[in-house]
Image (cartoon, rainbow, N blue to C red; front, side, top):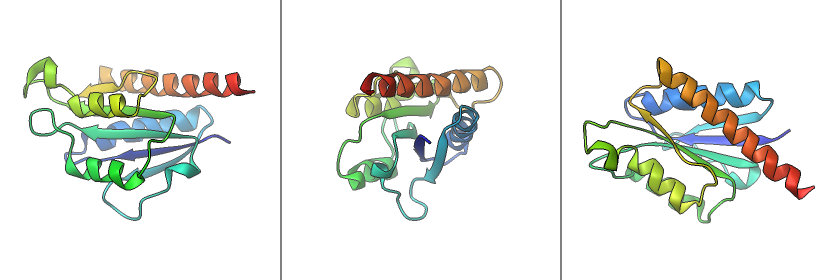
Length: 149
């Protein structure tokens, strides 16, 4: 069974809500999933997973939160198959800084699919956006896997 690690940081609960929807969707697609809230408990080893799904909120005018930066540094290498999602708020910095932490993380990890950007909470119409993105992650991973065999 394919295993995905979902690692996320959340202060307000918005990023946590997105992580929960991503988890539910990956499970419904037949994936094995482990979830880690960054900064709480021991850090899992990404080498034990087929893919890393990394979630972060955007902080202080487009910045990546320190706990996410520490998590990335603690990994110590760039895992392959990293998919990134983020939450943000366009009222602080407009479109240029909206979910900028997710954009920077996706660029750093050279993620093959665009980062998911959620305005504040994933409720309402944005929940469908999270589900569709998560299914796209599975499809992308399956496509890569099929190419190797």
